[in-house]
Length: 507
Figure 1 (cartoon, rainbow, N blue to C red):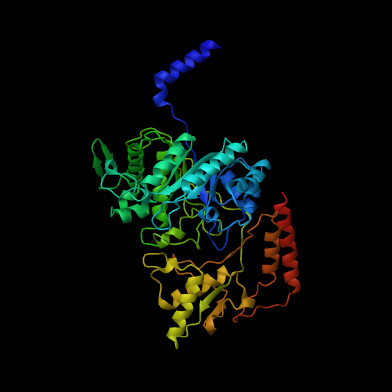
Figure 2: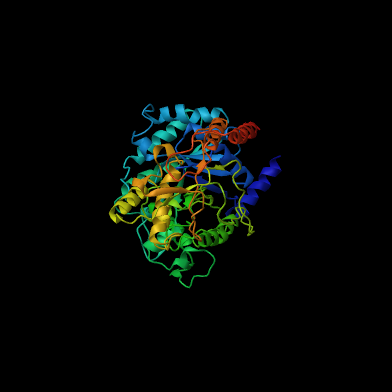
């Protein structure tokens, strides 16, 4: 056996610099949405699309329980609200968090591999979490004390932790956070942790005033950045190497970097389109899968979480309305565009979510009464404030429709978010709204119909009950009042549907 070890050591000495470990392509699942896919559906989507890693935000038990026995490696993000003790009031420390929210799902077979300790604690658009180093140290110690040393730890950062420069070689951490960042980097280095970096090329090209073409990796941009011996043809490599330089200046030239979020949105601005999203992933994923690295770190493996699984119509808008439209899937679980997660360059659509059921085909539209325009505008403002109207912005998918159609879109957006609750007057809008069975969509501007979802994982019973309840009221009325009478035909329709769903969810 000794000769085997000698050969292995000789191999590492001769070729160690060229040994490459395969990366993974994972995905984010944010749930800042009015309607979310049932977690068990997401488990199936990941398996069917061969996506091995998932990042979630907060250790929500009703999500984690769905992954019991699943091979999917989970990265759980501990959110700032928890650290600030604004949520989970029954959990007072990191030890409590592990004991109550992390260890139980692990014991039941959930494959938690990473804890991301706070999402973007140093970003300029939110209050800075100055005690992040202490939180990181406490969390790491709690993991070690509970025999969970295999769980890796990290903290995710947006690109704004780096000063904006014309060249990566000039990059450094922002002066206001540099002292605290140095302490965080020290403990990351000591604990075999890694640096997680969130990159959104569409945001960076706007902030740096680069041509939009620089956001893609298909070498079609005429704009390049020459930095000594290195040439940059796209935003990703520029931003990645800017962090590499900042880490080198901090004394950590070899620190592992993982991409915690990256993607391209499909709506909300003129450059956020389905076509551009497909174009971005078509060149980005093969670049990662083939371990091409960057000019300063060539031929390296970079683990990546794509952003994201679905749209989030309740996401906070900080950089642009497109932040709500990063989903590879639409709200109903249908894929928006071809994307080959394997990186082989195939034109293939992801598997569609199985089991989603749409609400009845009815929409809330504007009656057209313009006698009181101030009232109309007030109702639109209220509807958009409680729903999502980012599709109506200039350059977005519904940005060119007429005034009356825009009012209808706003009314319908809120109506669907409220699950078509006609009893509560969801399509009233001070007498300006009316229901219709005719799809009012105009070209690429789609007026959505909601989906029946269950926020908690309960074997699907809640989903089946939702289907049952909604099927009882399939009639279309011109008023906000629903038809409450149940016909014999409806009974024969509803009962089989209910039984079918119970059979499907117990398979």
